[in-house]
Structure formats: structure tokens, C-alpha cells
Image (cartoon, rainbow, N blue to C red; front, side):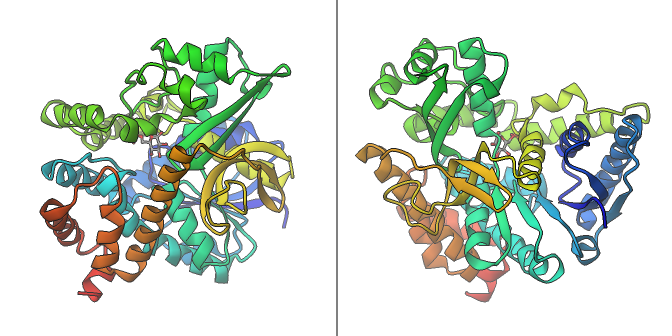
Length: 439
Ligand code: G6P
């Protein structure tokens, strides 16, 4: 059959119109035959609104692609070529409860970091693995693009425990590229090559090659002056400590503020939680507004309001990645994939977020020069946290969970940890069945 079958899991997400815009933009190089939107019962209404907007967007651009909506993954996955995974287990309510529970125990409450990231992983990994198992049967040759958070851990679980071809994606590198371009006054991000390496939400820019020079020191200098254009909407743009970046010779991604400036970030979060609300609560309101806009039968394009979300450019990057695989483009993109020696000091079979050449056979990670000891140790520590978390998510073993959390720099130890972990497990009873079986 000509053309590709594309499946979107978690299609009721407010980011989906960006995915559609990306598909429309690439209609001549990435031919879609049919589009399947999949969600769960709770997401049915949102998915219907997204489907309506999608049909209007396709029609406006003269594209005759059938759009199917379903709650039945089997029907959707059968014979798929590309599957985009972008679901949120437990919806925004779970994100908000992670934030509130963490803050109650004096810890940072964030959807992919610390206790919140752990809880999110434990809810999500079993579902992601179930989807991967279904894909092994129903579409064994398909590529799975994972942007379900926490993207690095979810990707590693799929890479390790299934045979599915998978690549994990994040928008942080794209936001960094755009920020670097604006700092250097360059209009096209393809004019320079940025090399990043690390773990998801834990990467460092190591090189910025432009016109035969490495512009990293220049960008570091510009950022150090205080105006940092590399930060997404959901992270406070605190100024990095003076001379830190120059001393490191690298640019930490914006999420590293949670680790290098934890106290400032904690106070900021606490203040927001007591005032306008946690990020999850703010996003809930933003989503409500977005879906009001999406409902408008006159609307036939991605609205500007979507740019208020931290995950902007995610979906466009996903379309570029699918097209790069399909067309064997051999371009450099920044993805989560098997390390295979790219970062010295990490196991070959773990997932890392690294600049990679994208080929029809998948990403080829680029080797990166060794990290300084302090940074490498921190990355290794975070990798241990991630691996123990994956193990806990699958086994439901409370002690494995405890061992994961106690080494995470954002998590407190002792009685606070005992109580916080009990509350997370109790609160997520229905969404973490492994912990109930393993009592
Ligand atoms: C970032 C991250 C994403 C995350 C998003 C949250 O850019 O890379 O992983 O999903 O922000 O944005 P939100 O608007 O939901 O807070």
C-alpha cells in the first residue's frame, strides 16, 4: 500500500495540532496514507475536538487523509509504520498531585525530576511497555517515537525490555538551538551544529560549530550576562551563578537549574504553589483555554496560544525525526537512544540524550569528548536513579524505589522520604498496580 499509517497515542493532548502542522509542512516528503488518533475513555472528548481541528487543518491544505478516532489500540496499531507516543498516565491531576505531595514533604515538585519524576515514571513505564508488546505483535517493523515523559526513562525501558525500534525525543535541545541562534543573531538553526550530551532533561551543550569556529565560549559569555534565551516557558530563567558556565566550558540545559540551583528553584515553586498555583495547575487552566480555541469551527491552523506551553517544538521535531528516518536524511538531531559508547563512563545499553545522525536504520550517536569528573559523576548518579526507578516501576518493589529516591539530589532522606513514598504509592494505587501486588 502506498503511503504511511501514522498512529498518535495520547492524541487528546493539546500539543497534537503542532504535530499536524508538522505533517502538513512535510506533505511532499512524508506521505501519510491514514492517521489514527488513539486515547482512553477520559480523553475521548478532547480527542474528538482535536480530530475536528485536524480534519479542518488537513482540508484547508488540500490533503485528503482519513482521520480515525479510536479507543482501541489493537485496531490502530495493526500495520502501523510510525507510532507517536505522547500520553500522560493519570492526566494532569496526577502531575498536580505529584507536585503537591513533593512540596508537602519539603521537596521540589516537578513532573520529570525528583519525587515527581519518579512517580510519573512508575505510572507510565508499565503502560509504555504494554504498548511496546502490542507493537511487537501488530506492527513489528514500525518506529516508536516516544515523547511521553519522563522521556529518557520511558525510552530506556522500551529499549531494554522490548524489541520495538524506538527513539526518544525532547524539545529542550530544540529550544536551546533556537536560543543559541537568537544569541548569535542567526536566523536559521541549520546554519550551525550544536552538539549536546547527557540524559533527558540533563544535557550539556559541548560545541557550537559555526563558520569554521566553535562559538560555545561566545554564547557562554552572552548567556552569562543574564539574558538567557535558552529557557522553555515552564522553567524560571534564573541567572546562572557568575562564571559557572565559563569555568565548566559547557552550557547546562535549563533543567539543570533544578540541580545547580535547587534551593532557588524550590523557593520559587513553593511561592507559586501558594500563589497562582503549581505548574500543573497553571497548565490545566491553559489547556482549558486552548481547547476552547480548538473547538472553534472556523479555526483551521495551530493557534498562537499553544506557544504558552513548555513543550513547544516537540511535535515539529517529531515530524522532522520521522521524515529523517523515512528519507534516510542523515541529518544531526538530538535524541534519546542507546549509548553504545557515545558517553564514556555510562553503560552501552542505557539511554542517553545525544546528538546523533538520523538514518533509515535509526540514530547513530556521535561520540562526545569525556566530561569533567564532577559532571560525569552527577550524570552517573542520575543514571543510577533512572535505572533503579525503571526497576521499581516494573517490579513494584518499595525498597528498590527507596534506593532510587535516596540517591536523587532533589529528594530528602529519612522519615520524610518514608512518608512521602508511602503517600505517593497510596495516592497512585490504581495507576501503580505493581506496588499493590508486591506489598
Ligand atoms: C519542557 C519539557 C517537556 C515538558 C514541557 C512541559 O519543555 O521538555 O518534557 O513536557 O516542558 O511544559 P508545560 O507547559 O506542560 O509545563
